[in-house]
Length: 111
Image: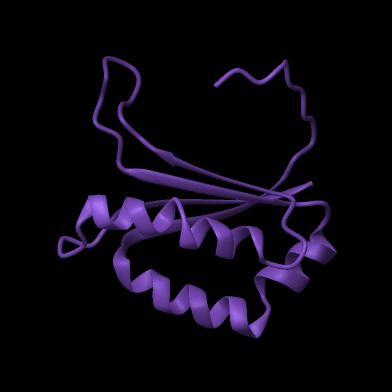
């Protein structure tokens, strides 16, 4: 499985509440609509470790594809990239990480 992880802050002019309203609805739907995506998560980073150190990023998005071929087909799609370029205007200091999941285990999900 291939995972895209994006760590980021918002530009100073972006209202966090308005961003969350968009990110949790319309943008989540967009992420799940990217060809090949099988899972997409979004998190607000509220603390750090050790000693509750200040984290360098406020938000994290992950998206998973079953393999590198499907990732490349979906993520590098011209429409996806055009939308990404527009959305990046809201973000400050984003970091994009592409990783291959070598092991995946889970217990019953409790939210």
